[in-house]
Structure formats: structure tokens, C-alpha cells
Length: 453
Image (cartoon, rainbow, N blue to C red; front, side, top):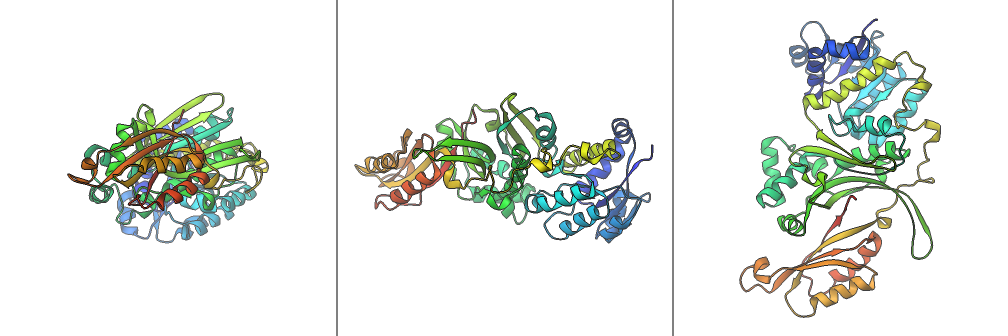
């Protein structure tokens, strides 16, 4: 059977890994796919570097559109990244009748609906296993392995840079800024780490996961996004003393409940933020730059997926898995292929319809609060009184010695409060009142707590 011919757009870290793994495991891949898979054309602005990687047997060009225009290319692999030229090239490849494989989570999180609609109309595949969690096959697990389940929630460590930083903060007792510089020196963080440390990268991935888990459109603009830049070494230490670890989690959850006033809340939570996670949970013990995704299904219960979330060959593993899927099904009726978002396109919930993405104010969770206060009588009573007035119940209180917080003779201390579950909007209102107290001396640190039962 004629080999599948692949055109590669971009041969950087992931592209070179894809070429190398395909070459090394060619026979194994052919046996699994039922036919060969060959990269026959590569487009990269640095043509000299590209030729040094692929050798003389592959055509190298500087213009990606030459790959798309080649009638012999069956599949275009987009590894350029970003929202701009990558979007134009993917849509042009689809219009030319090419199947597309991409590792571009930002593109799919923001423009996925347009891309999937175009692919459906052309009868081609858009595959994107490498876009979420690198080498971990979480897309295939959600889209195929767990299709018998109603997914209840998904929570994941899906950004290796932030997990490395938080692991180092815990192990070495250092503050965020110090560890970030070390992460940049070691190559775990980019020179401009904004997308990682502010939670944007994780939110792109969580957006894609939410669409597959719940059959809703990709809606990145409705995700709640909070990074790790405001975390202090003290928070890591206090969490540890309370039996928790702090992780940046991407969370998406199906929610249906009645509020106290009798109104119903129904929809999907989509949020990225630091969380206190019980230290006994497996996901709390994922360290360094590793990724892990925990999925709760109604039939199977909890399943955990762990591995490298980035890197040349781990991500290439996911790219090639998509190529093998396409090779197996390239001649199949498009109606019999696995839908890109797991659900048949005509059954996807409408954006803002019966399963809307909920505003953060309607999310219910529990909280860790660190409040720097004057070390004087009555402070704790006033704060707990305001929380009680907002209907927020307290699970635990930890008050540090003033000397421990500010040194000998200090007149201020930290109050650490753990709450039971409450609505975020109610917590916002209570914290606004507490912040105004003259005995509260600094901005309140609020971290959400997830038991992940």
C-alpha cells in the first residue's frame, strides 16, 4: 500500500523529534499503521538548518504554502505555533483537502470552532493529541477510551514550567522570583515566561479538555485564569503544615445544583489557578516538570494519566500517534471517523446554551486564606464574624507566633484560615469587607482548595 506522504511546517524542537522518531521506529510504525508514513517535504525559514536535520532525501523549502500546494502531500503537520500565520496555513491546508495534525493548543483554544467546522465541511481530519500534555495520550483517553462515561470533572497539572517552580519553592523554601530565575537558567522557563506563569498556557489546554469532556465548543475567552506569580514561600510552607501541597491546576467540571434562593445553576466550570491539594493524593506528588491529568467518570471512577508534558520526543510521540490514526482511517467514510471533540458535531451544545461556561462567581469550592494582621486582641473574632455573616463556615484556623512572622518584637502575625465550601461570589464580598479592617495590614492571599475526592 502506498505510504502516507507528510509535509512538515516547522522543524524546531518538536518537528526534529517527529522526524527522528519516525525514522527510528519506521518498521514498527508501518506494522501498526498498515502502511508507511514518510515525511517527504519540510518548510522552515531556516532551510540550511532543516536540511542538516532531514538530509538529502526530503525536499526542504522556505515557504509553507509550497507544501500545501503539493498534490502528493496527504497530511500537513503544523508545528509553527501561535495564532497568526499558523491559523491561515491550517485553514489553507484544510481547503486544499489535506488532513492536519497540530500541536498548537493556543490556535485550537481560540479558533478551534472555525477550524473544526472547515475540516468537517471538507471531510478531512484535524488531529491534535500533542496540543495537550505532550506525550500523555489524554485526548485519546477522553475521546475514545472513556466514551462510555459521563465525565464529571477533569483536573490536571498541564504546565511543566509552573510545576517545576512550585516543586522548587517547596523543596528549597524560596520565593517565586528567585525560583523563576533559576528555571530560566536551566531552560525550564522561557525568557518571557508570561504564558506559563500567568496560567494562559494551562488555560489553552484546559479549554480543549473541557470541550472534549462535555461536548461544548472551545471557549477560551470564558475561562478563569490565574497564575502563580503572587504565591509566597510562606504559603507553600503553611500548606505543607496543614497537609496540603500547592499545584497550578486546570479544572473543568460539570456542575448542577440548587442555590439557597431556589434558583438552579447548571453548566461547566472552566478555570486555572493555584490549588491546595491534599498531600496524600497521587497528583499532589507529581514533581518537577512532569504533567498529570486526573479524570473522574461516572462508570470508571478516577483515572490518572502521568508523564512528560513537553520535550522533543515525548511531544513527537503524540504527533506520530495522530499520523498513525490518519493512516488507518484515511480512506474511511468521514462520517465513521472519531469526531475531533468526541461528540458528533450536530450534538455539540451551543455556546452559552444548556451547558454554559459558568462565571467564576458561581463556582463553589473551599478556600485557604492568609491574612496579615495586627497582633492584638479581638482581631480573629472580627474576621470570623464577617465570614459567618456571609454564610462562610470555617474548617480550621492556624495563628502563627508574631516572632515567627516578623522577627523578635513583631507586632503583626499571620492568620491562616481554611473554609468549608462556599460560593466564590460570597467569598469575594466577605474578603472585601475583611480587607477594609484597620487591623488587616496587607492584601489577603486567597487560594482555592480542591480535595479531588
